[in-house]
Image (cartoon, rainbow, N blue to C red; front, side, top):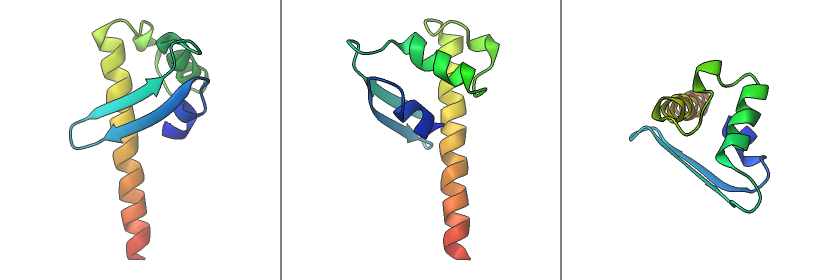
Length: 84
């Protein structure tokens, strides 16, 4: 998911912090909009229709929760592989 966001036009940085449950997406407003990033996630099947409006706290919260979960899963996979 993070890789998908990083590939969006105008996105310069994506950082997920599973401890705080926050995700920071830096992008150029001259090159893209938050709605375009969410649409990319929807088209990839990574975002449900309940997050239709990125201007609502519910929609943004769903994205942030999903990204935090994805980051935690990735870190756990890496930790397990490191132990093998």
